[in-house]
Length: 297
Figure 1 (spheres, helix red, strand yellow):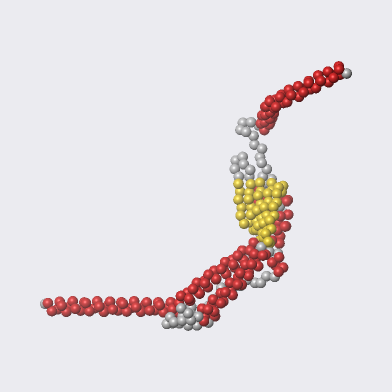
Figure 2 (cartoon, rainbow, N blue to C red):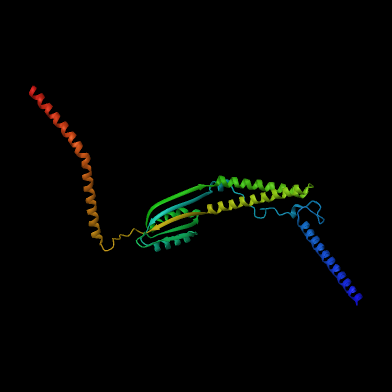
């Protein structure tokens, strides 16, 4: 009875050791496969993880597929961002807003933003932001006048040609540096730390290139489309106080003005009377002196 029990225990231990060994082997195999894949993914390493040259065609260069086209000197001189603000008094707020939308659509633009402010006994007004083609900016500004009484128009022009040329030059320099860094990665035989430093520098340069290209696209978009902010408002309504008509309110205001004028006149006596006494005394003394002189003559 004891011998079969011992044999059973030994068999279970042997099976457990075999299962653990197969698990460790599978784990080691999976780790090796993962490291192999990581080594294959790394630029400039062979399958064994040793440094090896790499062709430039295997490296993706930032911005080569969608590089920005060249710009002539005439184009640079015309790189102006134009913005304007206008205020118009209109008879009907809804009608004026509809006319503004039609004007923007007619010239090939669109409404970038809109807002309306209204309330009881308040001035009804609307704020409209128009995005219009730069070539038809003057036409849109001229089209505001028929909508109502044009109160103010302010136009601002910002020349960004110098900034555009500067950013373009920075992009070209960054791309040349990117090519040199890729060449170093393709032919280098240095230490792993040096390779990592080059890759970090390459990532930073590519980030700068993307930021410069984003700035160029921003400038082009704002040069092509001008911005016009228009404020529309209706005339201020004449509203009398509660329970009173406009005529009665006008008489009450006239009475208030008369009382204010009378109070100012009374207050001025504090200045007029002393000056009157001084002037009267001077006149009296002068008169007596002249009379005395005539008698003496």
